[in-house]
Image (cartoon, rainbow, N blue to C red; front, side, top):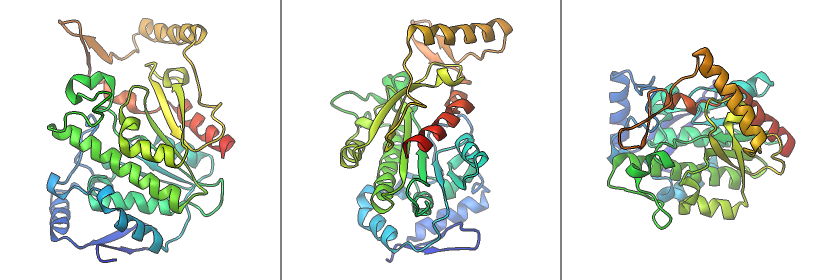
Length: 319
C-alpha cells in the first residue's frame, strides 16, 4: 500500500502521508495561504483548492481504493457520514436525535475536505469506513454540487441524452464530472465494504448526474431506488423537485407529488411571504425572455429543516 498511509489519532481525524511530492507541496501552500480553513466563497457551488494536474480520479485508482478499504482498521463509531453538507443541517438534525455524525464539505473543511484532491477523497472515504458495524445503525447522505448538472445551466454545460458528460472543454464541467465520479466510487466502496449500511444521494429532478455511466453502474449494481419529492413542500421557498437515490425500503416520509392541493398550499405560503416582504428574489427574467439566477439562488441549496428531518425519518423507517 505505497500511495496512502492512514494514521489514526485519538480524535479519530485521519491524516494521510501522501506519496506524490506535488501533493505535499500544495498542502504546504494551502497552509501558508491559510486555506485549510476554507478559501471558498459561499456562492461557489463547485470549488477546489488544488490545480487540475493534481486532481484525484478515484475510478482510475479503484485498486488503490479497494486496498484502502480492505486494510482499514480504525474505529467504526459513526451513525452518519454527511458529504457536501455545507450548512451542516443534516449533521445537526441527526445529532439532535442522538446520533454520532461527521460532515465533509470544502467550505467548512478546506483542502482536507476537497473531494477533487487525493487527501479530500480519502478523508471522505475514511468517514464511510467509520460507519458503525451494526445493521440499520449507519448511513451516508450526500448532496454533491448540482449547478452544472441541472436544467438552469443547460446552455453552459450542454449535457443531453446522448452526451451526459457535457461540454468538457469547460473546467467547471470537468470539475462537476470528477466530483460526481469520485462520489460514485466512494458509494461503491461503502456499499461493497459496509453492505449493512444505507446511502442517500440528493440531486434536482432534472440533474444529469444519475444518467452518467458511473452512476448508472452503481444504480444497477446495488439496485438503488429513486424517490421524487419537492423541498418546497417541506418549507422551502422554491418548489425544488428533487430525486433521492437510496437503498431504503420505505420512502413515505419523503416521497411527495406536486398535486393541485399541494400546489395551492405551497402558493398560499409563498404569497404570504411575498406580501410580508420577506420573500427573496431567486430568479430574474432577462431581456431575451430567459431566466437568470440571482445572488440568493445558492442559498436555496440549504435544506429546509423539515426536509432534513424527513430524511432522518425516512432512514429510520426504511432501514
